[in-house]
Amino acid sequence: MGSEEIAPPSYRYETEDTVPMHKLKLLEESEGLREVLKNANVRDMLVAIDNAPDPSKAIHAAMLEPIFVEFADECLKIVQPPVSGEH
Image 1 (cartoon, rainbow, N blue to C red):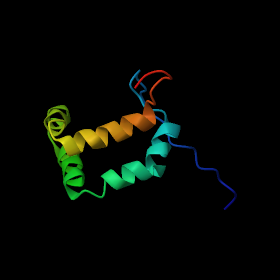
Image 2 (image 1 turned 30 degrees about the vertical axis):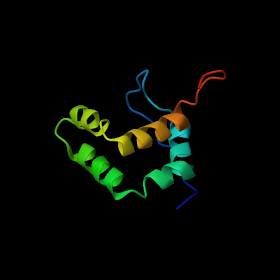
Image 3 (image 1 turned 45 degrees about the horizontal axis):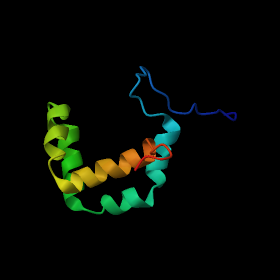
Image 4 (image 1 turned 135 degrees about the vertical axis):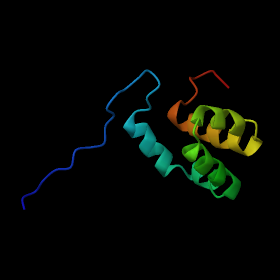
């Protein structure tokens, strides 16, 4: 058994909306995101979205909840930081 290298994860089909792997890694390391995920309701919503027959519809419904919007905003702040001069 030699020193086999494991290829970094990659996408099979990238689109213009695909989040680069290095930015996903930033989500994993975010203390702000960890704080939001301490909320059991947020975690329950994420499980429901993951198991939903129509995830887009489930995300739309979740976005009506302020705590889920806080989660989404925290994610976007990491993967799409505002351009200088934006608020």
